[in-house]
Each structure stands twice: as C-alpha cells, then as structure tokens.
Image (tube, rainbow over all chains, first blue to last red; front, side, top):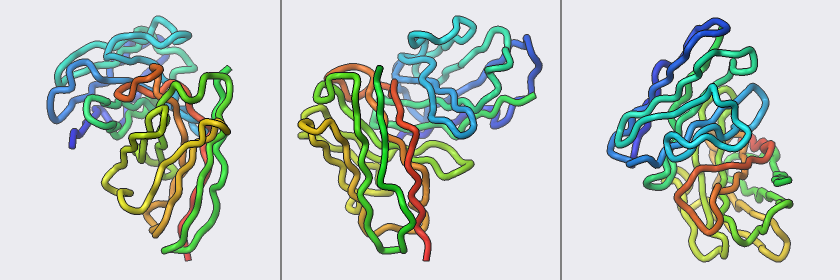
Length: 105
Length: 122
C-alpha cells in the first residue's frame, strides 16, 4: 500500500502569507496526485489534479508542484477564505489520502 | 450542475447491516466511475470503495473488504454501498464522489455529495 505523509499537520499563517504544504509518498506515484480543501461541515473540494493542474474555478493563487515522491501545494497570498484543512491524495495505486494540514490564523 | 445526494445513514448496532444510496444527476451517470470515501468526525479522509462506470469492476479498502459491497444501478442513476458486519470503528460520515475523467478510474474526485452519517454503537 502507498502511504502519504503531509507536513506540517497544523500551520499558523497570516493574511497575505505565502503558504507551502508538503506531501510525501512512500513510493513513486509519478504525477498521480491531487490536493483538496475542506472546510468544517463541508465536503472536500478538488483544487489540483495531476500534481500541478488547477481545477476549473479554483483561484490562481493555488499551485501544485512535484513528481515521484515529493509534492507541494502553495498558496501564494493567503486569503480569508483559505483557512481550511488541506489533503493530498495519490491515485497511482488505488487511492490514499494524507492525514491533512490545518491552516489556521 | 453535478449533484450527488447520499442517504441511508443511521444508528446501527455492532454486527448490523446498512445500505447507503447516492442519487446522482447533472451528468451521464454510466460514463463515470464512482467512489465512497468516509471520514470519522474531526479526522481525516479514508477511501472505502470504487466502481467502474459499467459496474463490472469493483475495488475495496482492506478495512472493509469482505464486509462491504459497492454496486450501481445505471437505470436509476444511483450508487449503493451495502455494509454488513458493522463495527464501532466504521462510525463515520460517508461521502460518494465522482472520478474526474469519464471512463477513467485512476484519477481524482471532482464532485462530492454532502455525506450521510453512519453510527455503529450499542
């Protein structure tokens, strides 16, 4: 089974900050990686697929990079609506989520 | 607009059974693989099971294999999850979700329902 490890688990940031979240896979997953945003009481929303492709309707301040085993999600300038929990997901072999990163003030 | 609406969640005793449903609209249902993902309240996301568009192929997480059965009725645009031998640790919010690309399986999930809560407790 492929394990996904996110860091950090919690991130404290201020409005306008550049935020980076890291996701590591236990083995190579090429670029079969997605990022989701989840707000309390809501279902997850897809932000990024294929490691770096922005889902339609997602603001351009979100970007993804990486391949193989190391990936990053970057928010270029943190906005009030971005305070949420973020999950990475591999779909190279079945599907596995990271444990999540909570972005808080 | 893509819509997924789960139902069937309930309080059930350990060892019991439950069937979840997910009614879909707004897209060509049989063209898309679908999946169930669960989330213990306050915890992370766990993939549970997936099924191809035609329903021929199914996939399960080890934690539910042999106890849960995924199926779909393409004439009714509905996805199901039959859950047997339920355990306390199956308590979670269950989401149905659509695989992003038509006819694909190995991809991300681009549309999600609002979830239905399953509580396993005596």
